[in-house]
Length: 182
Image (cartoon, rainbow, N blue to C red; front, side, top):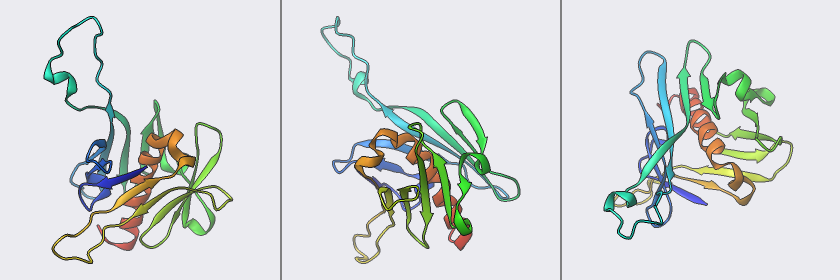
């Protein structure tokens, strides 16, 4: 699934399908000294009552639920809230080799690794070259129509899209802070 960003800042954008349907919303506070709070929301399907013959238009408005939160900190350890747990990123996303990757365990018990290349975080099944997700940053080739980035989630990651979103938001913010592009 290819999710297009509505803005060039992944930690403060909508993630939409090709036809423009928002699947995820990511909202961040303006960073204060060394801190940013980010919430990740997923669209919720409307709940229609089969016993009602007419449906109010409000039933078809997009509604969202929180799937995770990231509290980014520079001075102290950042934290991730996901699936009812609140953990430090040192526990949730441990450092990989040379500190250039972050590893987490999925709900399926499999370990996954975000590799943090200079501009393109890519998620793999740990220890393999099986791609699970990849970030494609914005393109500025055509100044009249700049193209915002996208997050591609491959079939190997379809079962854990919420977890991919939460961990991606953390690693992309971390990567951007590390290279000084915030």
